[in-house]
Amino acid sequence: MPWRALVWRFRVPATLVAFVSLVVATAVVSSCQQRGQDLPLGVPEPAAPAPTVWRPSPRPSPPSSPSPSPPLAAIAPRVVALDHEPEIAVLLASAPRLVITLRRTVEVVGGGQRGVIAPGPFTVDYSPAGVRLVALAAPAAEVVLSAAGSDQPVFTVTTSVPPGKPQLITGSGNAVLRADHASRQVQLIERLPLEQYLAGVLPVEMNPSWPVEALAAQATAARSYACARWIARQGQPWHLHWHYTVDMAYGGWRARTANVRAALERSRGQVLLYQGAPVLALFHASSGGATESAAHIFPGTGSAAAAMRSAVDPAAETGAQGLNLTATHWRWTATIPLTEVTSGLQEWAREKPTERPRFGTVISLRTVDRWPDSGRVAHVSIRHRQGKREADTVLPASDFRLAVGPGVIRSTWWDRCVLATSKGQPALVLAGRGYGHGVGLSQVSAWSLARSGLAGEDILARFYPGAAIERRW
Image 1 (cartoon, one colour):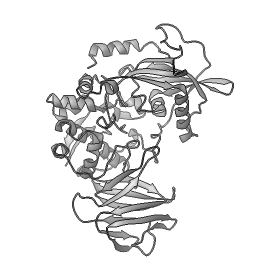
Image 2 (tube, one colour):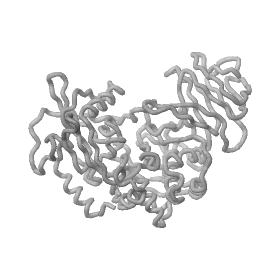
Image 3 (cartoon, rainbow, N blue to C red):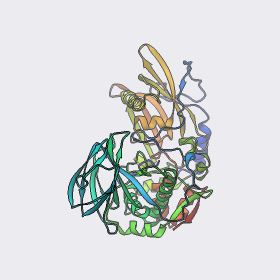
Image 4 (cartoon, rainbow, N blue to C red):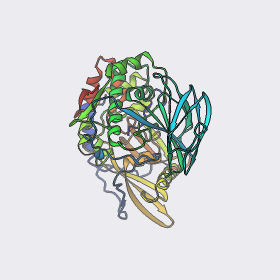
């Protein structure tokens, strides 16, 4: 799932020689166990109890995900032919009661009943019998609200995914209200053509004022991701979630800027394919000089990982510099109190108590190994105290980053990892490169490459070297 990389909202060239040097250097295990300094190269680790190695199988979905996402290997690309523009179903909200505001009159169809609802707010309640709606005499398992017309606002709803803030989303497709008996909630699902959906993704995943070719590359990556999910989730109530912690960020209907409109027209129907199947194309803010292999972050991806291998990316530095983001997207440092590391890991463990290891008070942390192709940290060993007992637990570095905070630990490419004292308290000090999980398209790099004159297809070829680009509609 693509991590949300809003360079323009909040949110490098590493030379090939520098990259190779880093990879060679990572053959030695680094450590944060010495307070205030790095463990000298070649010094063996202190003796410690045998660590508990946590290996998720299969890999769990993101922390805020309300529904597990199938692994890439679960995609069955030939079940459905990708020979036309699909209709995408997007989950926008789920709650026992929803308040929806209509922007125009809609026809209501459900349970063999028909009705009409005029513009304005109305309430939808879940019941064991189905969805209760004022326009219908009896509850229905599923209700469709449709409005004739083109890509224009139809309804608005306030939705959120903890711990995110509530967000107002405007839909332009048909609204589907569905009774989800497992959660005893009403689901609001928007059904709309894929290209119309992308118009709500593109300006929130990339700055809509960026060069057209950068936006076209982002649009093709997002289209490929959506097609892969559409195929994998056939027969399910929805294909994509609106929130970036589950799928891509989707902002709903919005007026299209000239560049967004041109990028969507320029790339219409273009899909990244590997062995004939759409690639679940991931993307991120900045590679820091080299991208990560999908096989490292998402174990079990099978052949799809061949389309997203690690690659040297010198444009990340020029992109970060040109956008004045060098301190966040090229080289960054983070000082994190160990109390925050502890609370982050404990909260992460509580989200799935039967699947994730428990953590006591974190004492120290060391890197265990690195991926030889990308140079990023692969696993970390966390020493923590539970009562009078100390234990070491090994986690994938990507999970540690998500648990502590992906906005704080910007990537898993660390050049330095030490313990120090900050404001009188022990803290973890990291110095790293890039922003995001590192797989697939680096957005600041796309900005730089587009400004240098590269076409969207040439940009994509750098970040999905194993994929072909085809126009399917």
